[in-house]
Length: 163
Image (tube, rainbow, N blue to C red; front, side, top):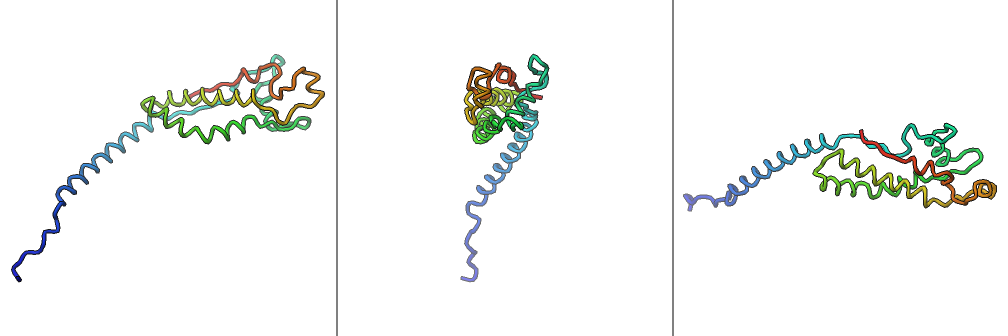
């Protein structure tokens, strides 16, 4: 019995070795694909009240939006923008992933689609915002109880830009 050979503990190892090499090759190809995708997906998305929009008296729309968002000494904060961001932050990653798959990881297309979606959410936030309401004197002056809409200039001045 001393001359008996030890049991073959390498059973299946050649197959496992081959599979590991194939997996390693797949991992390398995936790393290259991720790097290529990251290059294609670079860019910047800006959504909000872009420079240049102003009321007829020259007041920048972005300033009025800021005063509405954070309040002034005579008006309470009406956080329409922050509310929209909080809501969109929950769904944006999922939307971006779906867009990436549908648009073959074209960064510009993905950012443009996200920009349009977020701009729509911003408009919806302006239109649906109700609290805090307006003072009775403001309602009498403007003839409406809608907090963020007077002339419609702010609503119509939303936009997005991809760079």
